[in-house]
Length: 120
Image 1 (cartoon, rainbow, N blue to C red):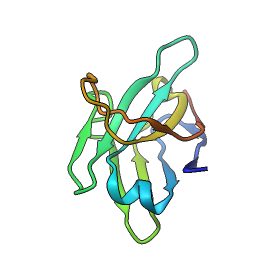
Image 2 (tube, rainbow, N blue to C red):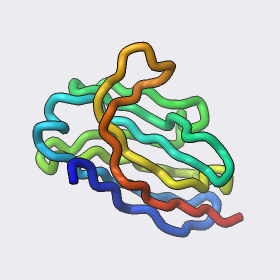
Image 3 (cartoon, one colour):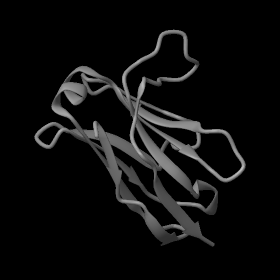
């Protein structure tokens, strides 16, 4: 397993969760890392991205509430999610790499999802 996501759960509206994605060292050191999410009945959508050098990029829905960062000692990328809303409910996936021509940062490596449920 090259990407292993964890940290999902059930939280009330306004609460916080931190997702983690552990990657193999090879993938972590050389690739941008991203988070995507997919809500029931909807397409998978981009959430946040961090380059191997630490530059970050957020979807409008995540800007100001979510923070993506790299823990280089643990080969892990984290997504700190604050002020959660019911519409943030989704399965969250970590992703690594970059594919040219994509509208949003996305790579060929996917982890399994972790469920985030925000109750109103």
